[in-house]
Image (cartoon, rainbow, N blue to C red; front, side):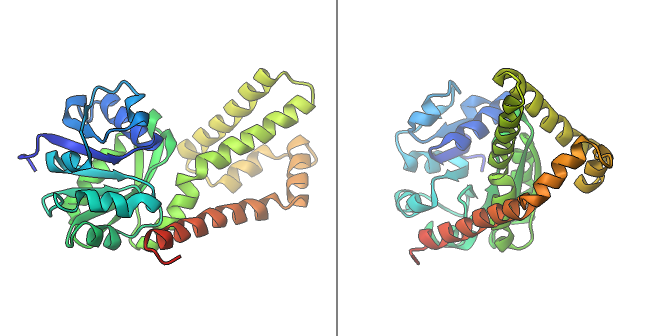
Length: 274
């Protein structure tokens, strides 16, 4: 891939693309002048210092590794714009929810090397998690290169069956939104109990972030850590009783499965099946 002037190209727009590029530069993984991006107001809003292409064709022509950051609904249009310059010399990284690697390869002209990735927003702070799947024509060296790239923003998890990428999307890709929503609800409870909004946010956010850190550092299960906090007949027990009474567990599980089903549906939409 040394004959390409840029190491990484970004086809598409969106906040996650800007977050990824920003982290790669900030971490020192890639210098800004090694990255070329599609014309994009969202990317342009970030003072990243990357090269900005005239169009998607230039991105693919001049970059060895190409990240596809378009919505599934717009993939057919994007594929049409770059098919003429895509080749097996390129390594494509697809960020599209629900779109199988085989479909990406075929849309780009055939035996293209494709790795499917699902990163999440904390990537920008170096605390992200990315699910990865290696497409049929990509080799282990390709996978290791992409792993290394995404590990610049946290950790990565490889799944062996592509159908599991929809589950990765539902748990990790959408997961931060569930967390923010729960913090909002904790804040609302604190405010109802008399706290000022800013104090409620600090207390709720730090409680959750600290709990997450313990989960990662101690290697214990969430159930074990929850039981350690819950004294019989105490305040936490009263809260847990109410959560069970309201069937919060069932509702959260169903919410994750709703995201899972939507990821599958997006793939069918991209394929023109619905």
